[in-house]
Image (cartoon, rainbow, N blue to C red):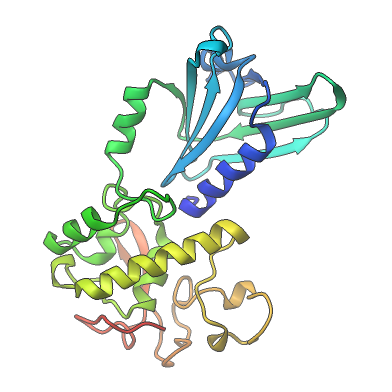
Length: 287
């Protein structure tokens, strides 16, 4: 499932591609036909992301002058994917949930399109329904208006392991398996340590680190958490094999201490960690 940096990156890309432009909306698959009809002929005002949720704000084509709007909500889930391009799109094939096409009235060669396949959610929401979605989400490290105080309070009161809490979107929005494993490693945090037993200063440092790592992910489109001195190649762009400390590295030596990276099933997902750098009850270390 795409993590939060990917959704913010998509929001940025869609904004650059279509903001201020009128779209032709259709649902070749038919599952979103009614919703597509409501935004067909609308103008994209803005896009935004919160955690793993993407929103498009469209001016209502029937009432654009008064600022009325239609709100498109997309959650990609495990299999959802956007494709985009310029020029006339090919004939729709397969299970295409939503197609958006924008044509410039003054330049017939300026055609832009966006295709959506396989999301778990593709729907139009009212403002109260959007607020209901957001009310179920924790703070998003990538939003400028995010206040981590509620997160720190919740972590400080919870008996649940940090590995469980960080994958709960109601606790913190946008973190997936990769960021969870890597941020816990970077701060020497035992994945099984209850939130209320973790050092609050370490948790705050981990949050600040997460913000910077995810911002870098938005810019590059990749999750890179290793420091140059811990890579096989110390300079230049990190290679895929150098990008992570523990994620998908079970059975391999830790880049920092040489201990074998461990893997266990936890909450239906794979959990990776270093037993030496993240000892039971551990924290306070940063790479």
